[in-house]
Amino acid sequence: MKKTVSIIIALLLLICSISSYAADEKEMLLASDKTEITKGEEVEITISSNELTGIEGTLEFEADDWTLEEKTSNNSFTLNEVTGKFALANISGEEKISVKLTLKSKENTAATSSTIKVTGIAASDKSGQGYEISDKSVTIKFKTDEIVEPTNSTKETVNEYVQINSVSSEEKQIPYTGEENIFISITVLMVVSFGLYIGYKKNNF
Image 1 (tube, rainbow, N blue to C red):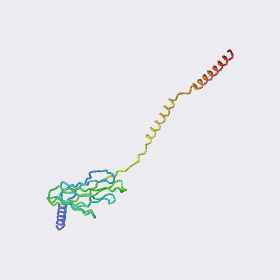
Image 2: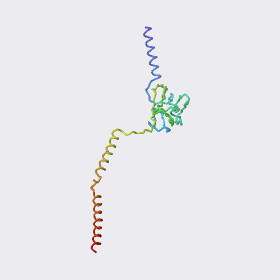
Image 3: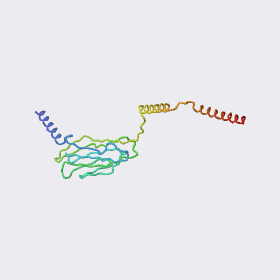
Image 4: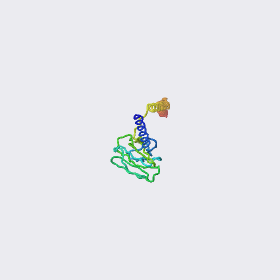
């Protein structure tokens, strides 16, 4: 009998703990307005929910990659910029909360991408029901200036173009016909003939 009572009490305690603190039954969103940026640009990170009245958690990002520029919210929002711990609540009790965080990427970061996270999330709705929500993250890529090397197919195409132009140039060359030598010979003959004619005239007159 005592064993049966103990089992019933254990089950009741388990049911009470589940009802007082549920897990992942309501959603919190973490979103970014951009997925790829140039180093030095800003991104806008939004933490929001249409099902909760309060959210607590830790904002995490690489200090070598980002600086926090601005925080904007119509709700009650506090953030410890040293630890990253924050609290977001709608004091009106309405199940709709959000905050926008403006992060600026550092121009001298060596990273090619960077992940922004919210971890250790605990939330509640207007009835006071508590929820554990899984960690959220967004990854932003940094554009890099890459020198594009020509592919083998491109190189082959260029070589073919050069060869075709070379053949075309050779085909356009006019073959040597010897016309220049014929012209010189005719000129010499004319000079000699004129000289003979002058000599003939002198001898007869």
